[in-house]
Amino acid sequence: MSLSMYQASIPVFTRQLNNLSTILGIAAAHAEEKKIEQSVFLNARLAPDMFPLSRQVQIACDGAKAGAALLAGVEAPSQADDETSFAELQARITTTLNFLASLNAAQIDGSEARTITLKRRDKETQFQGQAFLLDHVLPNFYFHYTTAYAILRHNGVSIGKRDFLGTR
Image 1 (spheres, helix red, strand yellow):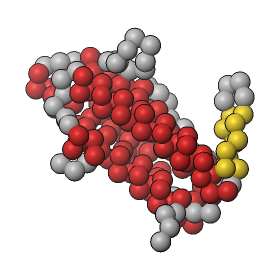
Image 2: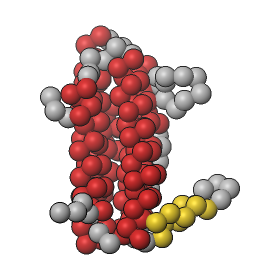
Image 3: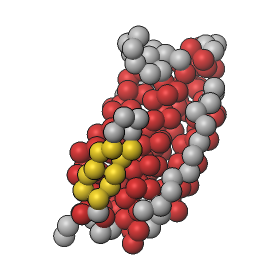
Image 4: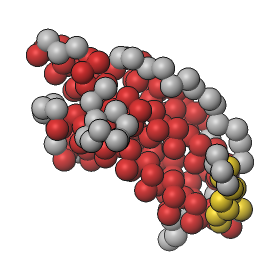
């Protein structure tokens, strides 16, 4: 049995965004318990030239949302990048999950060979649907999800591999 484009995208994003939500919940509880301002975590980064935690979460959500929308041939909802608390980042994840849940297999399956055009500041890049998902969307999504995890772990939040994988 082959793996469909829907199966390779929506359930993956959904599971990992739920895991990210759990990790952020653990971080919020840690901040409260240790009396650390949430902004310390939200503005934390692994290196001076990297985005902070809040931006990593925003980009992970945007990547899942935009990738799925392009595969489905629909518009992705737009969100302001103005979250300043764990609760607001949780709301962003929920909004993203709700959008993903609104898409069905019929919209995404068959997109393997669809031409996807990414418009960037200075150029357009074209992909075939399967390469777009496997070589661009998923690696980008996992990069930002993993970086968010690493920022929290680096800053003392008690999370581990099971939290990242959602197997705790």
